Length: 286
Image (cartoon, rainbow, N blue to C red; front, top):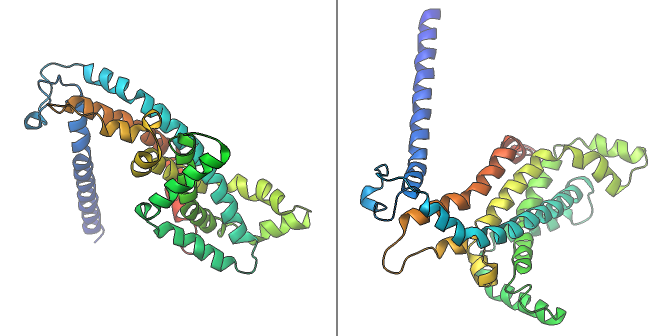
């Protein structure tokens, strides 16, 4: 029986490994096409030759893609970095109050926060544009909020509050209430307990929110098209504009797509080990 069980375990292990290798192979097929096409000259960059290796390797497409995308990449950095940090800070404080400092109507307020997750972008686009135009007029600023990066950051931060609050609230529910009570006994107030007790153990939730919001802001297209002008267009809009008049420059598009995706991949690689732990925290509680 032991030998039979060992053989079954071995067969199961090899089958699982084979399936995982197959899934990895299927997942990497688009990346292979992106890479090989990006190194082809325009004469070889054709859908009919997508699977073929370049006969002539060149980095010309990468140079052109970088020149076209560079302003958009910088605009995306100005959008995604402050937007992610502000969303993280607001979501953390909201989640802390809703999980550890209960008050009358807290559950109703939390429910109202969650309703914000289900409002489609298209449903708020016109009033959002009107609001940003009004803010510019009242502040005497022309093209700062409507037409500039600050307005786009504001829109994403407000739209990200519900999901960020949910993630932090579910994570903070798993922190023992005894820690907060002990800090109160030692004389810590609401903010002191948050800063000294809760925030130092929030790394998994912070990683989830940063990855979530950074990816959302970096990949945004709809808000960017409606709320920004040509000088403030982020990467996604610039990437959409890389197209030829007579022929499609596939190699440039592929190189630009890889350049546009690198920052989000780096963020996930750096913070990915915290991602699932923070995302699943509170799944069975709260």
